[in-house]
Length: 220
Image (cartoon, rainbow, N blue to C red):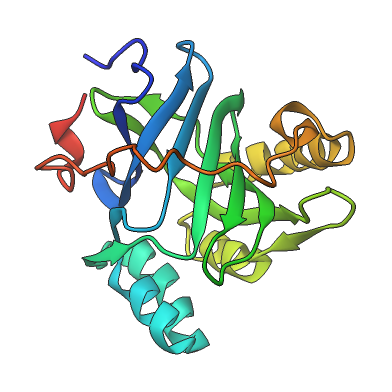
């Protein structure tokens, strides 16, 4: 049975799950949770699981490798590898909207500072965190929300053609796009606050992935 709420300071794992298989897993520290809205934090040094094609692309920036990740999703033939989070502190707000989460990337060692609206399937709480599936399309905004743009529309279109993103997903995203743009342009929710100097407390322990996290059925 999934946890009703997570204690502040606890570890919560965000997983992408497709057709009963884990596609990614990352441990986060819980900053706030009221049972509906959940605020999470991840920072450099945290171990995650990610598709090996994505990890390889980060190393060589070969776009052909990045694009192979979508056919792998369509056929269910992806492999997971360990990836150590780096470059940015990541704050994530879950539950502000059923069809996307809000993320703030804070540069600490070469990364970029930006807002990201991450379109995803509705979140399901589990005993270890939350399960969803990233629908690949993102809305990116600068820290002040003065400028915004769409990201990875090519991946989204490819996933549509291959059936990874269903007609139902597409309809939800179509409606959610307008809400996401409105959130950015009105600086709603966490976008109204100044996060420029926020950093995790140096005394916080690093979140750790639990054993069996790659088994989608291990957390209910």
